[in-house]
Image 1 (cartoon, one colour):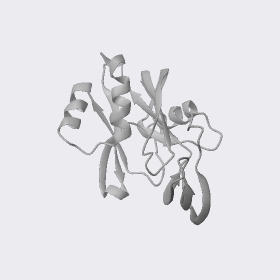
Image 2: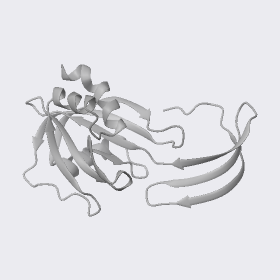
Image 3: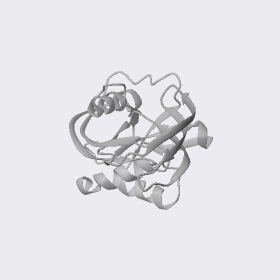
Image 4: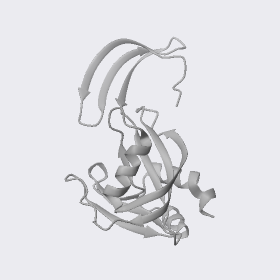
Length: 182
């Protein structure tokens, strides 16, 4: 996704922190219009997400514990891109690891910024169809607390309407996929 052709000028880097999955910076910058200010930003390699649908028309979601929210969030399977990895490879791997399903048919739905006010992360969304359950159940990553949830599209929309804890990337990707689910 093009990020535009008017980058800001970094006048001073005040703080940098490199974490396991992303970096955090505090910079004094000059915007393209000449305004000067201090910005905090997170630099992230991007992520890939699948809206998986079973042959019976059920959405495959995960309920995952997220430390920042201190609770479980309903979301579609997703994962962080490894350096140099194609988003389609990332999500094929994550779908299997998180849900125990493999998809035979993939369609790119689009891509979008997750939180552009403070982060450059781009989510690459895919529709995953012709799902097959793997014989061996996924082990998942050691640092994850995940359970698989199957829902109809109507049940998922009702959960959104009811204000259940659902992450924004899943809601956005669902609405990109909805035309294919009818």
